Length: 484
Image (tube, rainbow, N blue to C red; front, side):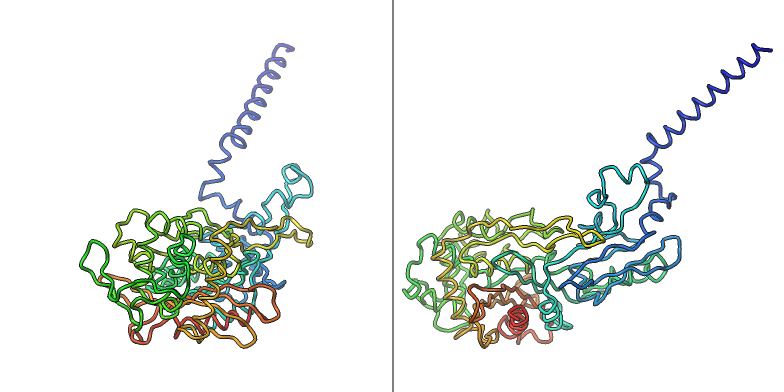
């Protein structure tokens, strides 16, 4: 009898060991496979069982959470969704997250270990932390001015505080309401299909994810290169530039829209936006010098994040002299995001130095205690301070007596540069209207805002498309709002 009991006990012990081994196999070895299985809804149920943290603008949340009472309990809501969509992105139960919702997802969802009261606390207790909040650098008034200024036109606006790199406005139109994608039902699916099939691409963040030929606004970069290289020493001296200018090694003759560009000084050429002068200056500086200056401004940098990724603005370094001439007036392969061109204006306003732009001021726990802060951003020297001072003088002249008069603000000094960028095969595309600028209130010690605006004009108003006509008034409204 005792022998049978002993055998039964050994058998039970083996069963227990097998059970423990199998449980360990399931929970440790196969856990990733089960977690990633589409049929496993537990991670989603856990993720949406509590409200998501908020994204704040000016101390007020522009996001929220709605209790649906379903298994995936809380859905994301948005205040002024279309206006802030290029900043927040969307947080969808069906389609994931984008932009700031994605970059700060760990903190907003409560999964970030920094939110736990003690290290490994949640691993032991199985508890979930409340989602934290993200405080942005956005100026609500500047954001609204940019959004309303663009209206129904396709385009984008980026605004930066030159002294800090804080992003004050980031707008892209046409836009969409991210709340319409928050759920996982048929309505969200229909909205997803409609938005992705829309030829105007409302979910494309044109301010940071689309690059455009910058046209004549790139002449700020070319002027900086020419001044730093000593190709130009006197703003008012003749530049020995013909009109028209035959691109080196070709029979292609470059002309100007404006009169009086033949042998114009740099000041006159900047105010009149003379293509011939700046193409020749770029050729005189050379590929190496032009590329070095463009890259100092931020071109060809694939690593810029704010904290979500920004598309790389490009200046082609493998060009012949004719192509270099076109590149130096913002054409050929030169491409820039609106945020990059705002950085160009900010570098001039900042005395030749630029700080990396950033969108998150600080992050907070649900109770309001600090998790992390942006701190001071590193600066890099783009050009000599004397060159920046001369460019500020040139840009001020454009607004006071040149093509940028529509950006003038009473009680402030404003510098700007207009641009009308050609594109398409044989320049057949409808031109883009550009304006880059900075503004300093009469009582301010330094410029407070740098702005870039691009408007994709329609074929109907092709003949009226200009940076001074379409883009400058929008920039003025944004600068006025930022100046307060």
